[in-house]
Image (cartoon, rainbow, N blue to C red; front, side):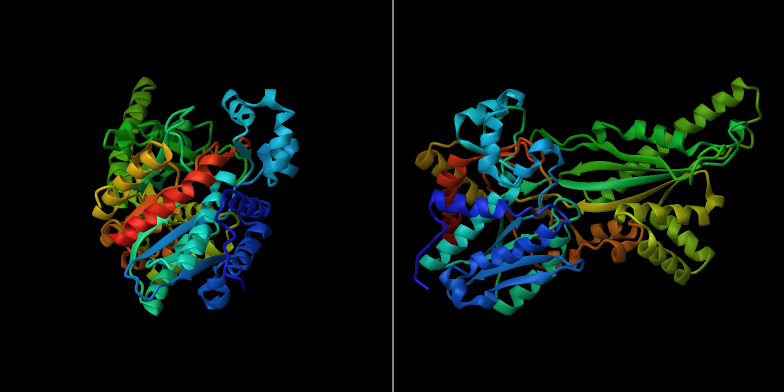
Length: 538
């Protein structure tokens, strides 16, 4: 092959991006399975990988998809940068009658000119500027992948004295199967090739901090996400005798009132506050319609993290659940008094962690019985893994119903640990140099932000917390690691600082998703090359 580069100019990179966006790699689709095979073909056009084809690999995942890695290695290099991206995208139903153009940005952008009055004002202004291309995956995040492919090509052509590992994964938009399963492979690659991972680079797009935000950002961490759940177990009764029972749906509503938008469950770091928690799912677990009041109800909450661990969250949830239980008891006693009923036999509402309930159930039956029950539900329950966790908690509660009324606290997947490298000396030097370079060479004022405010796979780029804290998560996850596994021990082995420097775009996961072409293909590539050179010289 002739020694020439084909992913360096703005036009070349845009051509590659349009080719990859055309593949409809919606999560769990056939396109998602095909996509990494096509990337492999493109990378093997690079002379270095044409000569060293074994350094480009597709790794099968446990569910039939695949993860692509590509390694550029220099014999004198002491540092290795892992470049992380994802290639799955969200569905395109929101495009309506333009769905057929969602993966054809050039034609979609043309079509939008004919419907310009239907667009929000900011999208309309961007469209008319001529600097933006619209389409699914343009910003989130195939442009970031193309940037990494371009860096690989340039590093190999110019023989940079730094190792680069490209990792592009499926399933980031749902459960991060790809990133969770590639971590053990990174451990193996480090051992096989003598690599020391010194930096993780993600190139997720810049997310606005406020509406109509035109500021350019990069990120020295990524916000975390965890999903605490609560199963409320009341007491059954006929609807004609409500005072004889305890309605679990009502219990859930009282608990939700204590959690929803509760600022005490937010965090503030360097003056930035994480969004407050919100309810994601709430329903009773009664099968079908009857005149029995629902006595089992489940709720799942979205909670964003900055510094807290599963230990912190579970302790906070227990405090809130106890407060909610006290309010429930006061309400019931008030109603009993109002209706001149005897409240001397009323039960206290107890709050349990899932692992406490599971231990009780094992003593009541056996460890083997409980494990078989969990495995049976995991294997037979329809739906996703959140449904399976809820069913396991429900069966455990039914097995231990003599403990009711009660609130059982547990975790449901997924869990994205928060990561922050702002005080790492490597990141401090890179950030300072990147800001100066962008200002003086490209007239761009970059601003460093502690946490990427979209969820990202950087959460699994090493373990930035105590391994013992993660045990609290696994023990309170119904079904445990057999149902949903995060390789915490392997993450600990490949820990390194993280940074996210990506393209400028807007409206991820919306029909107006779009990419700012001049910044993304004329300035960003040079910024990323500068970042690599700074790290190489550290």
